[in-house]
Length: 430
Image (cartoon, rainbow, N blue to C red; front, side, top):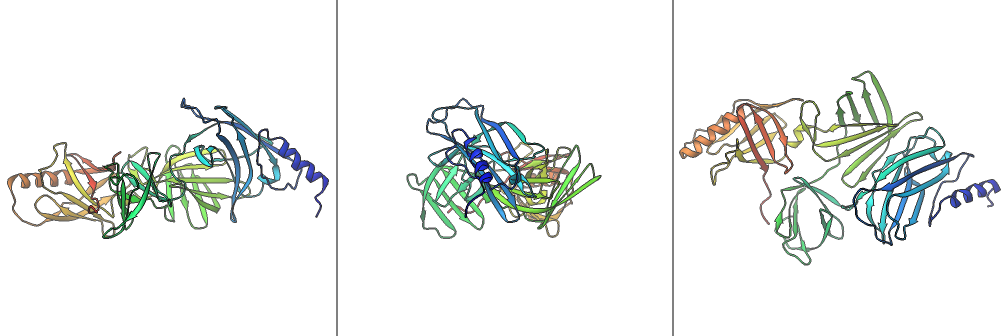
């Protein structure tokens, strides 16, 4: 089948307009308009790129059928450093319809990403779009694999298998384990991971990380919200509803595409008039007014507007684990003693060991604070130091007004009678 002459000329014009381009792919145009997208890739660190590095800029379309690369530009840098200017031209019809269009830049070396930009949702109102500088950030985690959160650190176990921690990859091999799965470093047996039931213990060169949990995508329905101006968004199986202006405006769009970008989940929705992308990352987010922690940080892009907020239920940060208290109001705890808390979401109950006696009671978590009802306990008698510590624990617990998860992943309960701090109970050592 022969292509019309006008179509051949237009396609050639698009390809010729990409200086230094080794490989470009675009959709066939149905109209005469050309859209120009230009900008530059850069980063502030004074670190030189390898001479053989290649810059990659691509535009993808996301709709109900999946995703498609509309155009990709590859630039051999040949020693050139940032900023790296780019210019893309593609038929305007390719950017029409109800799809979400995103641009992303990267620098790669021998097929491996060195740096990438965050995806940029394109919002076109004319034939030219200047993205301005797009920051390249180090690509330090496998895009595909099992992602764990270990206190303040995020760790990836890929299919090789390799353990990727703080940008460094460690080759692993399977070794026998009494239960679960255990992998050890090929060259360093003090680097290992032991995973069981969605949780893991991880050691890197003998340094044991805080207890790790597999990062799960947010389950639907999912709600996120932000302040000043007040807004909230509800993500369901087939739609996203955004309410802004403290309830004054409502926008409902069909959910077109959901995808993973490392540990982050991106929800994309659009119709003929609006585009909406909600990026949900498993990072602690604190409400800007109440300080209440939430399990997800959310960035919402609506057309050319960006909103920042928090998502998920704060209760999920407390449940499904046992907290072992390590400090009472800055005084530590008695050697060899044990104080624990375990939250039960089903009936709003907390239970544990208070140093000497077992206890149980109720708790109430609202959008602004956490409080505990006076607990009931057994009536055992123990050493005087343990009994005094138990009384201190109950006194602080009864006056708690809020909680936080600090940078180490520790639970911090605070209130009128002081604070207490504890870490999640790790798995038994393999």
